[in-house]
Picture 1 (cartoon, rainbow, N blue to C red):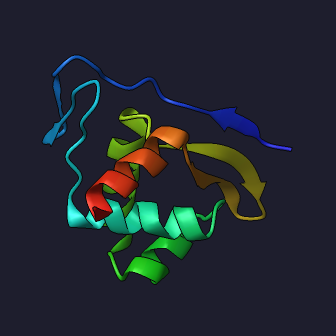
Picture 2 (cartoon, rainbow, N blue to C red):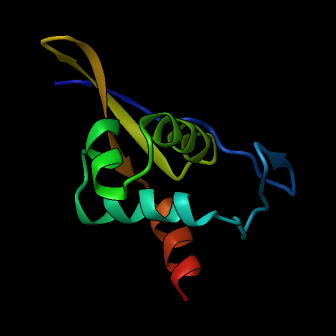
Length: 104
């Protein structure tokens, strides 16, 4: 059983990490939408698995996951892997809504 983590997200028209954030609107990049799609279809993925599924470089996946977590679109569970601690990421309800809005 891992520890569940969720980051608070900005609201009220702030600008965060190059992303426009408002109470009802979040502007996603295509790469961020790809990450959310992977988590929507296969919850509990590691950054390495997401990199393989999206063809994004590992550093790009980590950068996107950090921003998505700050926005409250994903959260992660810390699990102890044989080679250290790793995270399994999950889409939040807010992330699912943002993805649906992006795909419209």
